[in-house]
Length: 582
Image 1 (cartoon, rainbow, N blue to C red):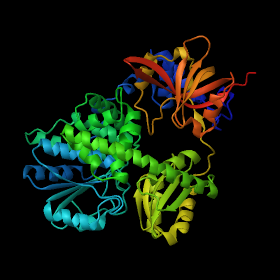
Image 2 (cartoon, one colour; image 1 turned 120 degrees about the vertical axis):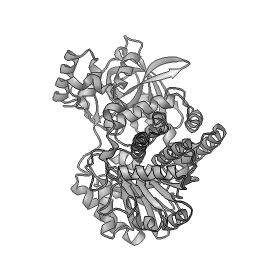
Image 3 (cartoon, rainbow, N blue to C red; image 1 turned 90 degrees about the horizontal axis):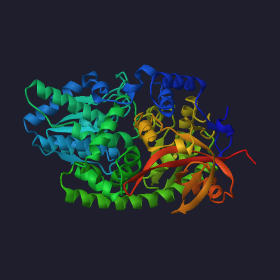
Image 4 (cartoon, rainbow, N blue to C red; image 1 turned 90 degrees about the vertical axis):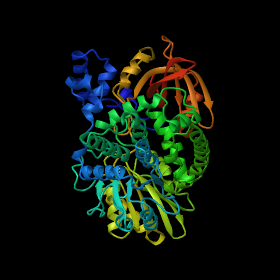
């Protein structure tokens, strides 16, 4: 049954409310706890038993952090790491160029600096070297270092790791492993094929953090003490959210605690980046994913690859401010490049058809630094896995994003094994690939076939799932704070979305290119303000701007807006539908 009888909203979606089973579980929780109904609805949707409700709202690392030793190779990795520290050996950190790689590298660099060691940072250039370790770089690092630690990369890098003659190598990664592992001291990766997968939700920074937990334990057993790991959780939180790792299990506690650490504004790089991003409130997952993350990523996408890691690891406020300004400039340039590629890719994908199991586009000169973002946009538009590839000559480098329930990384690896892709790898929701021009069509046809077998392409436009309905007067700051206790929200833990039924638009103003600011009223309470980002990219903006006094049901996420020291409730509007009333 359609929620509020909405079968076709202004954005063309059907509204779906909670199931009968979830409603019953929520009602039982309301009766047996003193929690508000909206909070119980969120907990019931997440499958939290009533008896565990109070504990779920207060996630702690003590309760949720897995024992590092449950992961294969963890103990030898930490032992070799500590041996290098004890013997003051030369250590190099080879990191991926995204937020997860930069945060992972910063964790190690900061930890080592506090122990009196300066490690070498190496981040490959996205265009010249591509993702992960390469033979020339590893050979060069091995001539000047005793230990190389590969973070957020390395699990599939057999040849480059073998080329690191004279140096030991440790891999701390989370990308999907192959049938064999590189020959090195340790490969710590919860997504190795011989792992249980119980910790497969961790990003690379989470894996690095667990290695440092194990190193701390080994230090204590030897009567020594390591740096304060709790103070480093801001880096883990940033990586977890920006890498779209599911906010479940230990990730909930890591992010929750990491946001508290970030709010203390002790890390120069994050302070400077927050200021240049014009963050004016307590950090939350939105800030990490949409304000800080893209700026850290900008260096690896279109600038100097190591800027993000340098920013996150510096202890100099002057250096942090300079790098932040540069990253902010690069992020603006990235947006311009992205918009151009996005328009071309969407036009091509629409011509090919958005109903296929795989939506894809490829073009000459498309910047490899933005193809992943554009793939995300295509995925969101079509509710299908998406691949976007930029060609330089006959070689194309691409990136893909998947939808829930469809393992893109495994399918990409299958194509590599079959010889249709030159390189490729990743995880369930995201993957990278290299393809030669003459293999493009057969590779995409084969990938479409593999994804179709997993169920890709069966759904239409994504339904809008709602947790319930609220009137504006019930949406208070206190209620939102209580709902937030069920978070943090993000990947794998969707933020609750509510319908506010039968309201009028009192005020509507276009903001910038495509956003819409609204004031909504039910005629009884003070009403509620709303913001619809990208409203004019769909029929939403035009219809609500020219509402003609009509009444609408509105749907979106409730958030707290802080302005001038005053907190008010705001609806981040996702959709609207005209009421059936005359």
